[in-house]
Image (cartoon, rainbow, N blue to C red; front, side):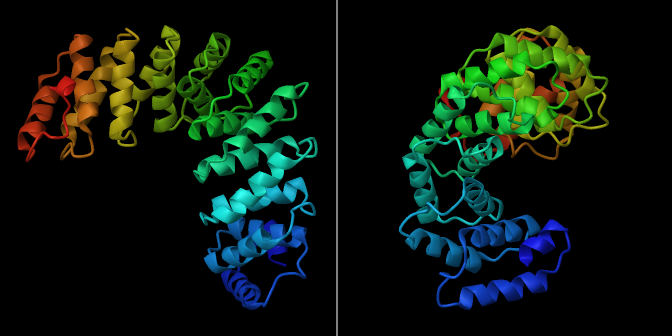
Length: 349
């Protein structure tokens, strides 16, 4: 029943609460099929109905089962996705599902979306199971092609591997080659493109063709309004860190940022990374540097900036020969006002 309500997007929290309490109060869940358990969890998660006791009851039940052979791949995918989306942790269940998948003879019964959701869910929940990631990565690499993976799935997979700090160069190259071979990147959201180049950069996997393809695509866009501040900052940082030069991309992104009425959506880390990236890439953009400096000067305080951020900012302005006395005085006044400078390392003085 709850699955049906969620499916047609009819919200009725009291119903979900009543059914959840009833299930929790049952002596056992042996009469529930694996599919029913999966449907219940995904319904509560997608409906945004928080019921930790229900998730614990179902998780405990699944954990006590002798095996998970009766759970279809999609059901397993939905279960781990539901726990992550509901922000409910159940480490015993996570371990049991991961161990089951790793022990399977093959993963051919898992469709592309199920694989992507499983990997993404474990990474998002910060639950580390390297064997699961390796098994899934190895399987994806052996596939003839990746045409059945959606652009978002591909982005989620490489993001997940990097988020979990697990290396799999063959997988990254497989994904990179597939993206490059695509006729266009119109189906990739700005966040997906940003996550892809960020993941490749953080993983230390070089793929210049991929980076050039993504950059050329962004440059050709009519507007960049769908890129949020984090996507813009991460994209700029990724190209600089990966040492992929693309001045047209940097100019396009800088012009877009300068056109904003304000840049309040950029957090301190994004501001520092953006300015550092332009200086490191040796791309000059006076308007961008002025925009960021004026914004920082206008802030009530700089308490959100860690010492490394402030050091990188003043270094970047000096190195780029972008004098902005008000910015430097703002930073200086902030440092002078601190009770101590213990947070500053020697190289930041």
